[in-house]
Length: 232
Image (cartoon, rainbow, N blue to C red; front, side, top):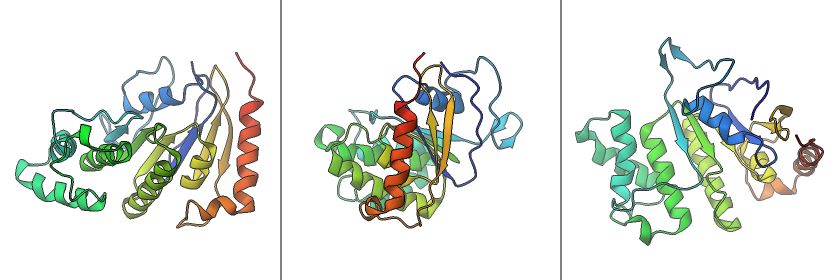
């Protein structure tokens, strides 16, 4: 359940949403994507009336097709974007190179590690080439080391392409390391309790930045916001 949600996503901004479990973080992504219609209010998207900007969604589970190899899974994004079939091979080659998967195009999901599967899912999202990328705890199921490595990959790609990103996570430190701005949600009914600008210089080293006093100060403030959030 959500109440009185109001925010603007800036062009090329990396925005994270954190908050207690069940506060409606994932619901916000589903509302933006159109998977769930709003019961009241409205969601304004860039683009012509009736033709909103295209939106891509990356879930916590990679949702790869188990019967398709890596190349075919990435091709799904190209097909959804309407890219002509004759352009698929070159586009997939470029994405595999970008994601460090050039040698794994013929592999099936069952043969890949969790981190590699999420790279493929990210490749499919990039193949779709959305204007807005919605990411619902995409690295939440990964081990700590792989999670940081995927964060590096995401930042590198975001720096090159500067898509607008809405990133949902339970990990406050992950949110600070990646984001330009963070929204903190209250417990149900979910409201935006506070908003923080992440004034840490870019490009960021996700390990080095955690040693900065400003990083720890912001982490503590967000944590206090979450633990003092009243329950419904």
